Length: 303
Image (cartoon, rainbow, N blue to C red):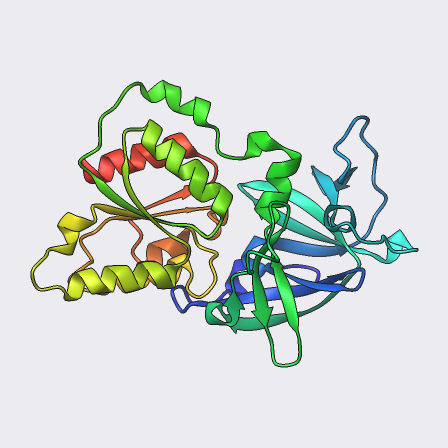
């Protein structure tokens, strides 16, 4: 399992994903294969003065220098006694490569997003790092929110509202947007961002299944035109119950809805994976946190 490649990935829009399971202390966690570039044995880490407490330092991997994040410190659990037996998961998030130190890597599971439940409010406080709880036959594990881990270390890697100032004052209040995003923090930031950009009529959903139920109900109402009620859809990819690729595929394969533009806004959009969004009919794909480009694409598609 030393290297991952886009060729092994699933057909787009099936609402399935492949998850690499790994262990940190006694906990079992998962990461979407789409985020993983390779898995390597632990190597010596060069410390960086005044680095964040969760950043061990950097490693050199071929011609690249990558930061190393210690997931045991992030999760508040014990480190292993022999760090050289650990593994490094090399991930690409928001077009940046990062090494995550874990204690053991087990296997790849192919599952449906329907097997992933949103964590309850009791188990997902402000500092929780779970996208969802993965229900397998013999156990449960946690699908970690790696983007949140990175943004807490480097806030500049998140959505930057100040960058919108280049767009100037705008008025878009007559447009109706649907935003599908499972992260509470990002829903709040997108609400602020889009309102700042003049888009104030926004309906939010926490996953693709909830959004699809709403859109399908609009389409089945013979007394209304869903393309007038919804002018554009913005969707994340990774979400419990139904992912953004599957939602996009359903919208674009429905003659009643297919004229509604769909913009995929996700940290999973890389050069290797851009074709997955194209194959399900997305009208635009923007990598988080490129918020100015997101607004420009919305303007292009609805004005």
